[in-house]
Image (cartoon, one colour):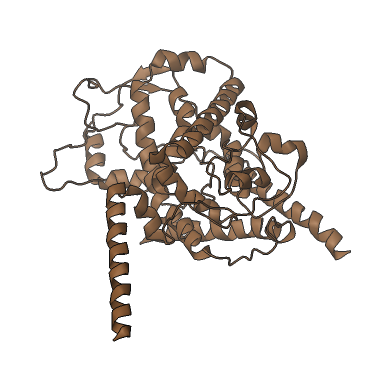
Length: 283
Length: 150
């Protein structure tokens, strides 16, 4: 009982804090002026937010701690020793740059490979972007993304807790780049990213670009950087996708054939029903 | 006039909240030393008398058919040496029945959902802002007894 109360407390506090941080910004510097606080699909995104705090984060951390422990057993100690003999700041820079490099390519693959896109499109199905929509993420997508981004630290045995401030900043900035804010920050955006860049990543086009984690340097390096001087007209995906929480969690794990079969049965049922109704009304 | 003020004030609020959050999570606000009223360090450090499981994380998993870890050793990051577990405490591992098995052991659940104190880089989408507070449960009696016998 106490466990759930603590989780609820953390979720509630985080929610209030995020409202305090982002809502004034969204009101004063809106990217989409007509978007309200309680916009369409707000409840769905709230479900994802609560799901992340109450259900999935523990599971994701558990999976990652096992993954990291497994890596401990296969990475040669001599390799870690040679890494550790470098100056601490160099190690920290290596971990951050390698993380950005790996997550950039991992993220590009999520958009290219059908199997990965199945999970990642949950995040892209958001048709309205704000700080709450940032939390729309399938738990398997979270394990993949967080696993990749932490891979260099796991492999090198780097103590990330020594960079707690940097990590906290990256975490909250990741939410900020989804918020309904347009506030140009000039050349600084090349270093820490900005909402206007990430909004274009959420364009209807699946290959719109801007795959980098926070800093767009990797996008510039690999030619996927895009920053038009306006907001995309629409966010979301072109494919059909469930609009409810359970549907969005279950749909990606269902085998495609099963989905197709269920769809066929539903279409047949709908057609038969409409024929029956037509005949019945004709009588 | 009001409009001119609102914009810089909003940015100021945003920047100060983000800075405050980063400072808080970086642990800058945590005082590492307890000070006495006259400024001297208090000798309040307690000796850890509670028997705990190994300081080294033991992994229990099914190995592949090609290789297996024979000896339970791990790399100690502080001493840069490979070390063995510091206690003889072992957990009973058994095969589950053919129909069902326990997925999580209660202790594993505790540590897994304790939201490890060590940091991880959050995904590009969102991050956990405030971690839940958990009271660390007392170790099971069996662990304490094993340690006392030693």
